[in-house]
Image (cartoon, rainbow, N blue to C red; front, side, top):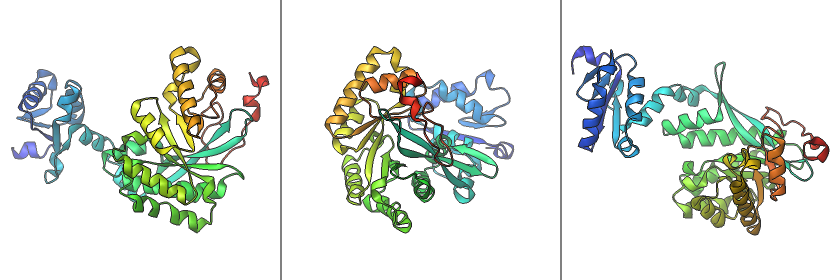
Length: 341
């Protein structure tokens, strides 16, 4: 590599599959590369990241999994999947956020579909880095890209408990997200949760730990052990994003949660889909047999609310009932009464 090339930003591309390396080199050296400097499997120069993104899109899923990269600015680091390196490049603000940023939860109501009263609030995380607000999805994606799920999950859970418990309206449940992938073992997840609850002298029965996409946790024994220990302390357990797939159903039967939340993808436009209505009805029956209340997530329209209520869903969450706000807001019970529609 020449000194001029070394001075440019970019990546060195690697793969254990020769066919992938050949295809990558062919794509990277096409005339459309413009002013991108390509030397063997070195991709450098202005706009290298956009060029690499285009190149990755031209590969099959299996080829992408075999393509790794090292940033030229940090050639002492270990190779990472090329897609992950691009995600890190796009979220290079995240390490500073973890060190100096501020977590602040917003609270969205979870509403009883019969009475219209708030059953609880989910703490949805927002971040502030200087004057810039970051949404929960952005923060989670950045944490994944930087292998910082444990640190992010711990900070988010701490903020949700410290801010949310003192603000929680009487009689309501605080839903706090927990990513099972960030649980190293049973002790670590207990240590990063219960000291905060004890310090606030809070009632554990008003806390519901919401496992986000639990099917991504491959160690099901660990998942069960974690939920068992939290329940021993008095907390409720919820499973998020139930889709009706085999993995999500396996988690439902394994954990037997207190609350089961139906994925937004099933809620959106359900009033127009006979198939989804049948799937949701089956999910509701399964959850009720296991003793769980069912929440429909992502309810945005009155027809979606009505369809879910007709299918026996117990609770609803979404913009129809209220936006996430810094302080829990009152819920209009007329939203579930016939006069409201």
